[in-house]
Image (cartoon, rainbow over all chains, first blue to last red):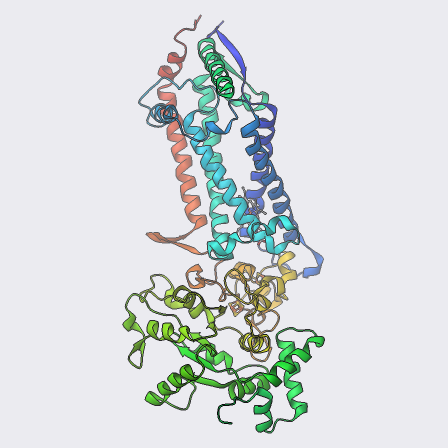
Amino acid sequence: MKTRKKRLVEIYVWELPVRFFHWLNALCILILCITGFIIADPPAIMTETEANFSYWFGIIRFIHFVAAFIFFFNFIFRLYWGFAGNRYARWNNFVPLKKAQWKEIWEVIKVDVLMIKNKPVDSIGHNALACIIYLGVFCAFLLQSITGFGLYAKMSESIFPKLFAWTIPLMGGGLVAREIHHSLMWFFILFALIHVYLVFYHDYIEQRGEASSIIGGWKFIEEEIAEREEVEEKAEIITQAARKDE
Amino acid sequence: MKNKRLTIYEECQQKGISRREFLKICTTVAALIGVESSGIAQVVNALETKPRLPIIWLHLQECTCCSESFIRAYHPTVGNLLFDSISLDYTDTLMAASGEQAEACKEDTMQKYWGEYLLLIEGSIPTKDEAYCCIAGQSAKQIVEKCAAGAKAIIAWGNCASAGCVQAANPNPTGAKPAHKLIQGKPLINVQGCPPIADVMIGVIVYILTYDRIPQLDALGRPKMFYNRRVHDTCYRRANFDAGLFVESFDDENAKRGYCLYKVGCKGPSTYNSCGIIRWNESTSYPIQSGHPCLGCSEEGFWDKGPFYKRLPDIHGFGIEATADQIGLAVGTATIGGIAIHAVATNVRKKKLIENNEEEGDIL
Ligand code: HEM
Ligand code: SF4
Ligand code: SF4
């Protein structure tokens, strides 16, 4: 029998709302990319038919818009959870304000990209490099939503998309907005490719249950690292309390 | 008596236009600017009481297509009215006078009607070297600045004056700029299009004449009453768009069937203009009706959004021209290659990585 690493603890890293966001988001982006591709380059129909017999392109666009609304409000929910969620979901993970974050980014690059170091980084949630990339992804979400809803404003009578209409002239008109919207789709596709690969990679080299953690929420962490994390967390709570007392 | 300016109605009377005909003109005008029948009285009142509107029409870096469009207005009575009564005091290409006489005309109008005249600008203004466009010894920029100072309002005709049009297209050798980039603090209307539709041009002037104010504008300075809707939403081929029936090439069966031109580059979905409603040349037709996709000529920078017959623009500066899809596909393939290499490398150094992880573990 082969066994290893006996001293592991399980840590609840990804809370249910984070997992819910993750999978709903993935589904929405998948649907948005598929319908987006069809909108960008609809298949050729060469049989003789009349327009009033079908509405399929309208339906594809309708699916795109429904998915877009879900995508957007799911995203807003995740932003909210950045303030309400646990330490791994918190917004300050994603904004590299501390020196330690920059140091870790460099560490991760050394291990995972340059391959000049062999000891994986200890962080329990996202590593710092992942976090800064997610920051970029969130910005892309925002830009995709702004261009999308800005374009959508003219196709809708509801008030919500109209809130975005003013952004289109700033970009220089709908032609530019469409181009940005279309190009950003490729950003999402590239991100998804690398993202999925890296999940496998980390699961493989770190053996902490990276892949299953986004399904069940738990990760297996070495006791030592977990203890350090706990001390850190307590220290944070104490300093926060102290600050409140002042 | 000499100093008293005649009202438009009085001018009409002098020209022998009957009251009946005058009212007809008023009704046409009202229809053009979209007022309800109850608003006709207001138009009649305006034309009865208001003196003629002095106009200076400048021709800068342009091709004269705006003027060409203008003289083909559908409503000839209104056109006449504008030419004769509203008076084009200065327009280098159409006026009888030329040379010094023409310039004197302009000076005269500016002096006499300082603060009252309407300045119409056709064409863009070079800024890289002002010498690119000079008229009567003055650069376009100087002329515009001088004329704008005394204007009551300014109308920028067409894409040139509104957004720079073809002269401002990449690489913009003359540094061509639209009027609104050079003039501040004056009401300015961008009557977009390459050229704008004649009836739209006349509609805007008549609106100013009637209400003595400029029409409501959109965020790009275009009058909302003509540029509030997309060509796409007013297009008679729209049903084919929703049904997913597209022309694949200009000589295919689908083109004969009159399907939607989206896939051969129609920019109607992002273009705001009245082509689908007012149409061109006495409302005979418009590009899409003739089987040609919309180029987006009333939008900023439409020349650089080409090729005209492709849906999405080429992205310049990649050595070769490529669309977002080609670049995306190339980068995507490279990424997959990178992933494969990374995976192999990871497996090569697997021992080090994983053993490292297992330092404290037991392996039985
Ligand atoms: C991951 C997110 C998204 C992706 C990958 C995506 C992808 C695309 C693509 C590729 C197109 C075709 C563009 C073209 O070639 O002209 C498109 C069109 C469009 N998208 Fe998105 N989109 C996303 C999110 C959104 C959102 C949040 C909205 C907001 C309502 C939106 C609204 C639109 C609209 C209005 C169009 C134009 C459709 C038309 O003119 O019929 N999209 N999208
Ligand atoms: S021809 Fe152009 S404007 Fe008309 S429905 Fe098709 S895409 Fe829209
Ligand atoms: S159909 Fe489009 S390109 Fe053609 S004149 Fe109208 S707005 Fe301009």
